[in-house]
Image (cartoon, rainbow, N blue to C red; front, side):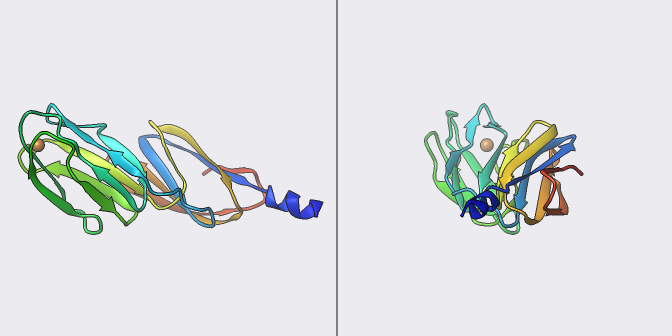
Length: 167
Ligand SMILES: [Cu+2]
């Protein structure tokens, strides 16, 4: 019994150093975090915060805090949406059921730009540099490093034996 308990505690970390990274998420034997509800506000013709990371299956709404209309949309192939024109208020929820990076824009204000990273597994949001995703069971993982330009740099990684693997 003791041996079994010990084996169950063999958890690992994936760590790395990715300059310009804003988020990292992994898929593999680790359980994905539960979906939730999130907000990305429209304030002074900007998205605040300009970037959020949400577990796959989450809902996001885009409250309009400005005294004029916005019209938020994305042409993303997997998570595209268009919620139409709406004035001041909480707005409606949009579901994001596919992992990936969603570029968010406004039909009225072409310069507005937001980004939603839909994570398909355990994730961290970072400001560039080092990161660590801990408490992972051994196995083969796909690591998605998302840089500030929205590019997904994907690496496959075998996690076993060592406590931390850098790449
Ligand atoms: Cu707008």
